Length: 284
Image (cartoon, rainbow, N blue to C red; front, top):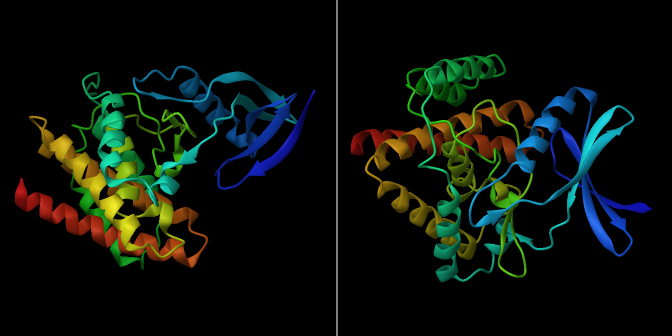
């Protein structure tokens, strides 16, 4: 026998519940609608076959359907999100965490695909249909993406939503990745772009006023991450690709904007990423 303890918030497309079974807990991730069932099944498969060094995901216990809605049950991981840890973590610990994440990114296993650019063209077209013609900065962003060649974005395993809110630090120091998502294109560069969505743009902190301490830690993590990527022989190309993916990620938020804070975040984020892309073009 088990009982529902509470429902977590903030998970688009699905619902997340904490259950108690005897003296232990588990988490149930359930489709919010029957139309989401297939996506959640893909997320289950991705999490079940997760295999990266240095980091873990919650173990899968089982799956099924309830009222026509697909769900799967997984380990409840105690810990703190990296978004919250950034408020008090020692600056010298940040390098260690970034190194652990980088060691788990499957850069060497990535492979190129002949249809990559076509896949991105179709995605950009779908996004353009959901953006109002009067949003000038969004249209400028689409024009930049339209003129970019995405063929050198490699295929590889990726988590799909690697924000600081989805990275859990356990009391023992183990890193867990939660809320793995299916994606229109799987690439480690997509994960790094999601990290920069937090480290450079502050997505996870958009509803609050960031103070100096948080900004210092975010800037430190970003600097370490980018310097490690630049150390690769084609690191400049990597970073250009990643910022293009970051621009694409920000545009994908637009159809889901429900509050003024998110609207302001998108406006500022697009301007910042466009400025960074122009700087990179001068440097490369």
